[in-house]
Length: 208
Image (cartoon, rainbow, N blue to C red; front, side):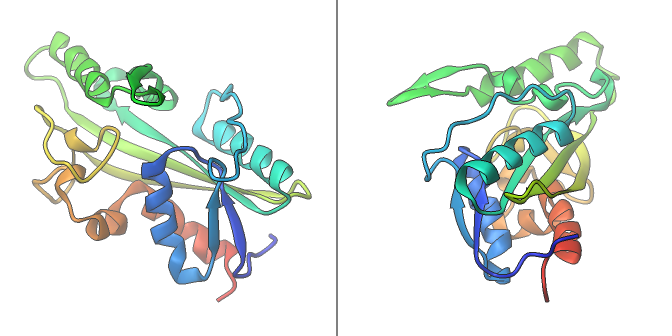
């Protein structure tokens, strides 16, 4: 596959939390990261039914619009007892919520929806879950590559921690008692689904 040299890379996201994590993971590889949001690129409609389809859609749109290689992330929470939901609809479960300056997402509401559905299944329901991340790398010439990572754990309630974003405050990774939102960001980066996918991307796509 085409390999990346240090230089400009468009991160195909308008999500500030994702951008922070991705930038932190790419800094050691000499990439000059700029987000689609910073470039004023539109967000393409995510019409895919899998993480890979949506990630590729976003990466190709950003690469074509910017003229630079683009990296996108499509990720979400998959709960075993809910047959993998919310899955690709992870952000949709947060719906739109107003904030100063425009529409946002209500992640506390989203976490409550997951908890409510688990409660409907009874006190003995499995709380096993995983975060899934698919990274898609696209070039302006149409070439592409996909890398998938996972982080396994269980869900807790009520939410705990202020350091993460999305569903982080209710996800406890295997081998720990703290939620992703209670972990030091450097530690979370080392064990997250995104870190797993990035390790595969770096091994395949970066000149070392």
